[in-house]
Image (cartoon, rainbow, N blue to C red; front, side, top):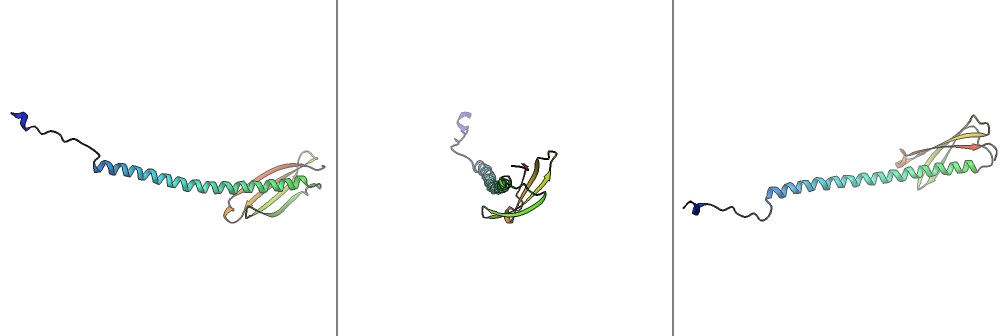
Length: 130
């Protein structure tokens, strides 16, 4: 007789509201992390482009120094270049080396405006006689 009064468990077809809310919260956190990662990626790409442009300006100044038939005078030279739509300020410092046939030239390029934090430093050794 006791078998007639036993309640059967209802079958579960689907998720409870609590399970859905927990899943939605986890998905929201993951989506927020992806959005923040994309913002960081965009900033990093812009910084990398500015740094690459600074290096390009430094290499251009080095080519000018190396291709000039006259050796660089000892001391500092300053200049400005426009490259990539931005103004770049460079300083080339020529100093003697232990070898009297060579001059060491250190080139420092600094950006302006949005690229003010971007710098490039390049050192070259140039023969006095070419």
